[in-house]
Length: 393
Ligand code: 1QQ
Image 1 (cartoon, protein in one colour):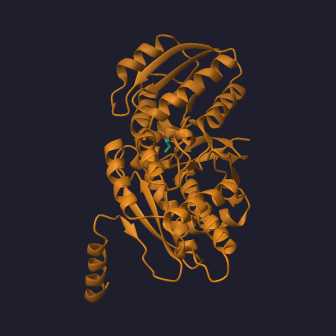
Image 2 (image 1 turned 120 degrees about the horizontal axis):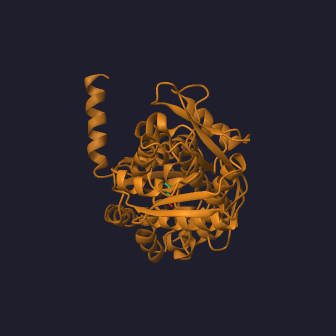
Image 3 (image 1 turned 90 degrees about the vertical axis):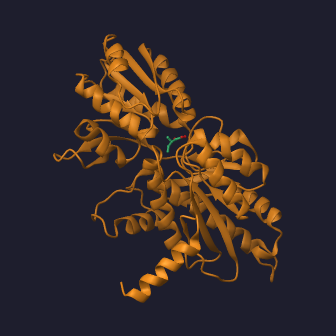
């Protein structure tokens, strides 16, 4: 880059202040869209996937009306960071907010957006109870109630002799405690024996004692509800301590960013996917083409990347529909902001969307209605550092 260009780029960065990224092309109906995503910490390993999806959506919709200026704030991985980020976003007067990454954060900050009358669309918040937080809360991430039983059913189908099941769950995370309840219910419903229920923490790195305890109960299947870093270490240490049976992992490990953590021991992990890269619709073709630019020709976007792209898409399409319904001469920006937000929410929840996650609709409460799911198995390459999620038939 030439020195002059470098100076301009530096100035642009300075002007952005605390904002991680902001696209501020001015035009007629220019609206601000907020996004509060975990870009750092344990959940940052999932939030970075979301950022990729938001960047791709922003690039795709850049030239389509209405213009959206994306303001992305890093929530970190806890409630305190999410609160700071959401306060900043709410003060920026956005038309809607996407995020946060974790349900644990969602229960803390989605009520803030709800009270401010700002539609808040969960990108990856899957715990039970998220849409019920308030009327302005919705999500594009299918709930654990739908997603978790699928991987368990697939594991039982592939290993029909299984009787004894152990579960691990991070007790200090709202999603993990929600997900493990669904897993445990599904285990009992299949007539399997729950031989151990082991609590962990999202900040744990050493699992030798809990694993040794659990292995005494001789499980034939292990089911894990954790986040990326703790969950990945747990998987690796389970294998190192001699457990060789199947492992079902929950949504907190649903990212290729687990590979450097559990390395070759990630191989064989089974995880439900709310995204099927083989889906043939215009939106998924756009996502795939954008994602593969600069990557391998068959690179597959992570689930959370597809979910973030989808969250942006549904807001953009709902705004375009709303714009089309206004009387001649009225623009979106001419509506008072509280009214615009309310009408956006109503339009968004009434719509049907063809997204990378397949056809989506919403319940009146704001929960997503998605039809297509699959279960993937992680297949690691011989280098033990790279791999892929392979959809099981
Ligand atoms: C939640 C989740 C996350 C683990 C996915 C990013 O599903 O917190 O609800």
